[in-house]
Length: 536
Image 1: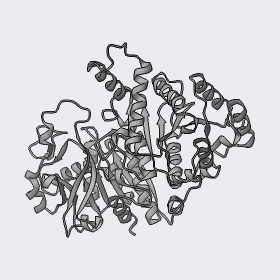
Image 2: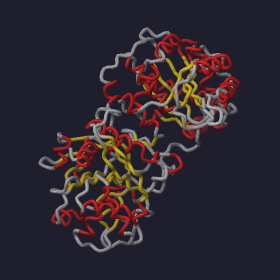
Image 3: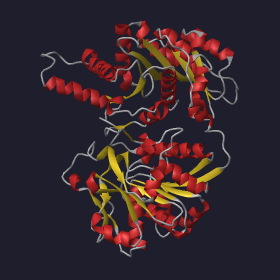
Image 4: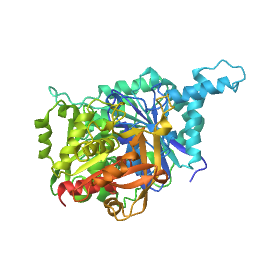
């Protein structure tokens, strides 16, 4: 196409959580369906270097890229929509930019200049974006700026966008502003004032949006559209209604029904402006064409914010859509099953399947162990992910092997039976950020096992995020008691999969299978789990 990449900048106003990530992903999907090479970048204005040390209950899930990046959960959205493996370069934070600038200053690269926000920080932001787009030979990069317009933290990034538009020219940059048209119950009409004020704030810092993506419960009325157009100085056809859809995967169709791609193509002087839908509409429709339901209990530590497990949610929904079953999820705090609450653990018998997701730390761990054991004893399909894999081993060691007090040294450093132990490479590491076993690793799946029948290949690649692992000093004991360790990595140093034969489905993995799931292509462990839970 053109000799240099074009950029679409997505900003948000009024409040967080409007759906900038889905708007970004859907815009990128439309461009991809039209035949362009496209990718996305998420900008997070916090000072953390990355999302790795952040509390998932406050910030949401930490999504792990194949190259080991610990990223914002929107990176997962991008991967699921455009089915491209992102890298750590696709998540830029204030901390990362400032570290680059300070390191350059220490190395004398600024030749004695007074280092300032403008131009040095903004130049670093622009350089990061251009470098990634050019390295990947993209036609178009869609850049989402986290936070809300008006936040002091995001100002350097917005200023960098403004400069890029000035430098690259009108046909090489485009601004999409996501805002809100709420309906007050007492009035019953869509209110445009939040959008007006949000656009005014954006214009005050030198950016005029080209397209307004207006979030609303029902389609934007013609009166609201006209009013927004007038006060925001945006053409009526460039005011896009982002009303609720049956599934997020239907959003590209919602946008295209209003000629979104045509508007983008006109602004960026693109030659192709019609998406070739291929299988996408069929895949999107599968998320609303169900023949029944399946009830899953997700027993975890961070369930007060379901976004803590957003990739688990999507992986379950991908599997459900594939087999035509709607997955109804109950998010259950594992602490509920602690302190001798056996009667409460028995309530898990009402579910078709039990899933134990990732986590860290002692709080709630005994509840997950109890849930894993209950699933084993009562023939309820069980899927354990990372922490859920480790605690399933603990449950098996205690209740089948008879190892009293068996535990992970993460939870009990003095346990007499450390069936899960600190990885040797981790012992001399003191920094918390970016030091776990992270990213994609090749995994050998043993032939003749259930895991091999599930995956159908001898080798898979999956992503990891952990410091503890199964202690192979106990391999003989658990195998003798009937536990099958059916996959390994790093030339046999790490055990990756456990299974229990003759159980309807008892399967746990050290890796984060959820990060590899895609709409239309559910990750095999999740599909197998949901099929077992649905008895299909």
